[in-house]
Amino acid sequence: YEHQFKPLHPRSESTWELKTGDLRIFGWFVRMDCFIAVVATTKAFILEHQGIVAGFVGEVVRFRRLLDLDPPKLIEGDDPNAVVSNYDLAP
Image (cartoon, rainbow, N blue to C red; front, side, top):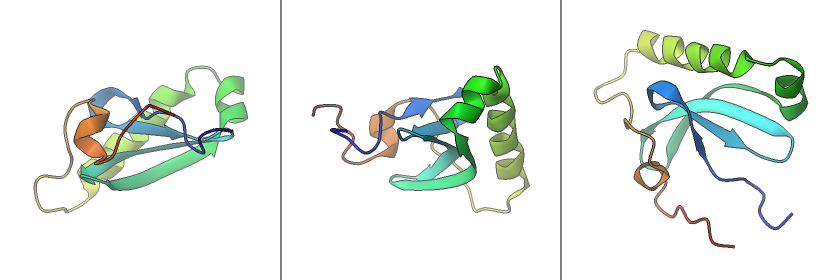
């Protein structure tokens, strides 16, 4: 593989899916370059269970709401440049 990780994939409610060739990791960015992972699974599991991604997003949102974090709890939005300081899609 040219890149170990694939481009970030924004999901609803300011959650993110990080992808490798085999893994999918769901969480959110609490600040620039600081990702909090909540749930991870394999690409194969997601392909076998259509619609499960929405459940993972919901799990991230519920977990985040329960944490007693100082505000702001997250970076809102879906712009990868707002959450990763050196985000670049160029090979």
